[in-house]
Image 1: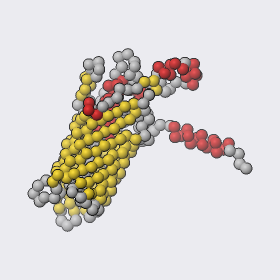
Image 2 (image 1 turned 180 degrees about the vertical axis):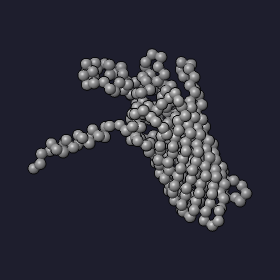
Image 3 (image 1 turned 180 degrees about the horizontal axis):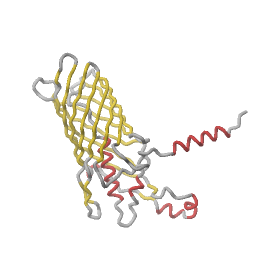
Image 4 (image 1 turned 30 degrees about the vertical axis):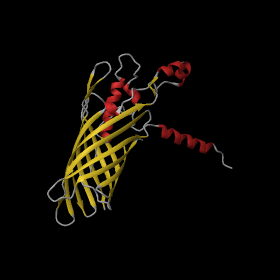
Length: 293
């Protein structure tokens, strides 16, 4: 009978490996402890949540027209997110250097009466976090020879596998586009749109001194409680911004290729201490490749 020591050692090694954070995992304790005197921590948490919410919802990658009640689409997508802020850095495990890459898989299914359902599963590059999106779209007008296609889309996005905080984003956008046939099986569809986005976020009880040694923890258990706190909760009604986008889709047979530019204007807010925070815009360059049936 083999000794279990070898397998125990392997198990411990695997557990230790999974505990190591990836470079782009978020560490919100870096934003500072809200209980500290003259702390900007709550304002920084609000800026961070707004920027991350804009990044996760900055891709539409679909024109205003729907697929049709019998059709569906499966695409692989990639977003390159450029955070324009020079003063604020994302609180990542290692010093963040942009752009942030967000690959995703997007499923869409056409329904009767010009409706369409979609789902997107995204992953934040070099992290253990992802995001899930559900969406519904309705084409108010589509398929007319001399009129553009018009649509309304609603969606909800949830950050997944985050450690110390939760983030939820909802949005409503209006799109316009027009499909042009180019000989036989090829179509080109330019499109553009406006998106209004709501962001909410909350934190768990955050340890703001995770680097303490075991000896320090044993010596002063009360200090551990003093170094923990929660950030102020962000409500959707008070955290909104506008996004503008434009793109071009190519379809040849069942092959679909697309590109899109997105620009989110986050605006400004005033914190509890009366300080005004101007948030830099977020620009995103999105690409898609997939099949349209």
